[in-house]
Length: 330
Image 1 (cartoon, rainbow, N blue to C red):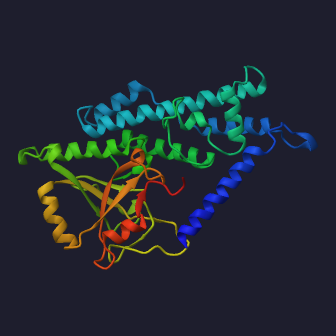
Image 2 (spheres, rainbow, N blue to C red):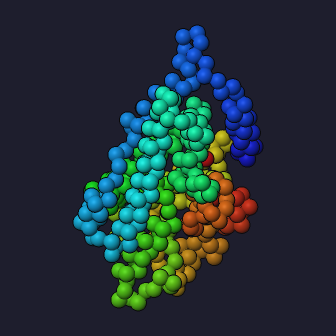
Image 3 (tube, rainbow, N blue to C red):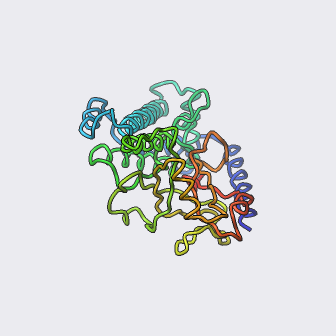
């Protein structure tokens, strides 16, 4: 039933999208109501007022230096994420300001500004905010303007809190442009801590374990090694918190939030021993994690080991197409 529900939701979304694209784009304004341009003008002003302030490079470089400098892998990652988020903030601010001027007739209404006007009027994020000219991902792919802008504010909050107050106890994986880079930086830090044990990056693999914490505010301190993550959703299955195993999805529940996840690294030899001890002879389900719903290499992040029963083993969940996503929206 959930597969059929997913199909019908896609059909309805496609229909609504087609209707939105084919409706008249005229100015309107008759009968005392606001015209399309006036609505977009006020919306642009509202977004500009809510837009986070710019990141000043000298300021955040100084703060990162206080956190240990750019010799620390996760600090390098933070630096790169801030640079990318600042590029998005600058792009949005510039285009909204230009759009206001174009609506007032002070600058030429280019094709890009016209596309932005149409998208904002339809409550969608403009194409230029999401993709580059070559079609690469510039920010994040979300269907609605409200969701996209809320994500911008949440990402900004996570990075500013990390920059000003130090590392969070639990990271929102969805809020990173490059989640794979984040995990690689964590892997480098843990490997360096085990320098005396002669650990090398090529000899370690990810170790994942679902925690009993359901919400971020339940996490009171960081793990001794690795990181805690939140913001992952199971697609195609549910998670039994008491038994800590995968179970079948409930009807009409397409996505199920995964509790807090602990991610660290182990040597390949230790990981092999641990698998037999924790998961038995039938082994765990290696659950792929993707940024978005399309299951492509482009959006793949890493694998999470999830416990399953001998009756419903890894083959069963593979046929179900079970995966973890960093969003339940797209």
